[in-house]
Amino acid sequence: MKRYRQSVDDLLYMLSAMDVSWQDEHSRAVLRTLDTLPERHIYSREAIHQLLEADYTVGLTIIRLALDLSKDEFELQMRGMLGGGSAGVKRFQSAPDTYMDALVEMGILKSFRRLTAKPVTWRDILVERLKLGRGTAIKGQVRGRQLEDFTEAIVSRVFHDVGYAVRCRFVGSSGESTEKADFAIPSKTDPAILIETKAYGATGSKQTDILGEISRIVAEKRHDTHLLLVTDGITWRARVSDLRKLVALQNEGKISRIYTQQMAAELEGDLRQLRQDHHL
Image (tube, rainbow, N blue to C red; front, side, top):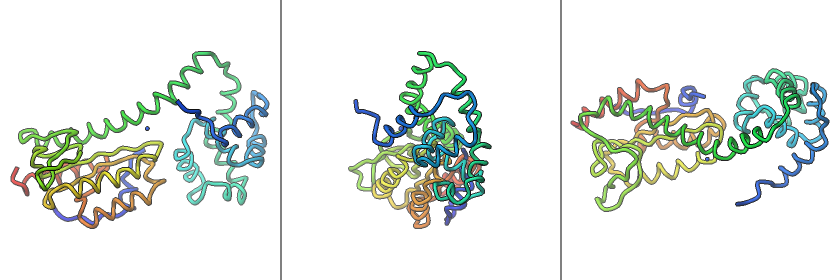
């Protein structure tokens, strides 16, 4: 496999679109504001503007809830609507009309109309609780499994007659200790190739964890074992600093190459070359 020097911009371009009280002070402020909002069938642009002017942070949370968008999802979409740059309070204060145009284009008025016009039933309440609780966890699990399946399909095409271990603990360079990896080729007892997969969607709380996980694999594996990372998810665009650290590890040769789903052909090509290099 040839040596690569990757860049953050290249990877960003290849990205495709986890029993205590849940309330904190901000949540309570949002609830207080919701109690003061009149139940109108048609919310106006002026009403949304006043909501942001009264308390931008609280107003923005209510807007995101109405749009059903996470903080990261909203920020990414809003930046796109505004043509880049900041999408926060300073942008709202410096160009309120442009900011409001973007919110309207995102569908905030339609969202409020649907919410105020639709009668809420007990079923709606339970569905929302299911969505916010179990649904959030399931989305993360499915997202991760989807990327594992994507990777395994390619690994299987290249190494079906050689063999590989999935979601295992591979034996490290000392021959005594082990570390976790998603794929070890041709076996977990003596891997020539290791592959780690990480998928991210609407939240970035786990993204920093990958730096520690990759560092542990790097420290445990033999120096001549190739480590590949397969990742995806638009949340990386909002957490470029973490992605930059991974790219630095790649440029240092600790990760052979980082891939996204749009790089399927490159991943398969490199795996075929690695099979030859390691005489598998």
